View 1: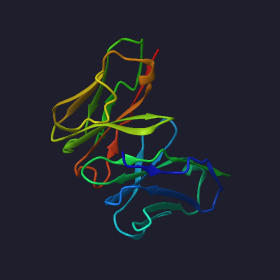
View 2: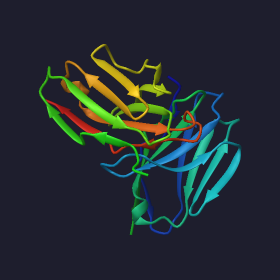
View 3: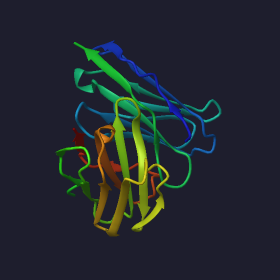
View 4: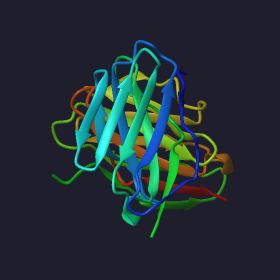
Length: 110
Length: 114
């Protein structure tokens, strides 16, 4: 099983700050990378996808990918209490199935 | 779009009983995945289907687990006999692209085996 590693947290940031979530993966052939958000008791929800090196921005979210370092990150600008959730990094090494990290718990404090 | 539909939402059963979880993927999606989530192990892939055919079942814990996809709109995951260590949230997910563009999860089934 190829590994996807995340710091479990919790990561605590004040409202309005930037939250930075990080993920490393072990399979160098990975081509697709995703961030899912999961609220307590709910199912994972896809929020960002990235396929090439560099940054991808969508609203307050920016995904960053560095394939040479096997590193993916998610930045959340102007963090809101409603962003408090667990963020799952997922990697598609090849074929069909995503490998998930165990997630980072984010707490945004008012 | 009704999303991925799973049933039941909650299941409490006694050890040794048979449990059947059900999933209806999004119409038009040709790949379906069963995952199990626990605090200790996170999201684990159990099995996935492409065009109703099982592609990889290496994540199925043991012979007590079986999955079927008799048609494009329905899949089941069966545990027989169930054990307390099977207690987890079971998610079904579907996609059109084999995972290359991510996939959509159902609401999950929370299974408790006592």
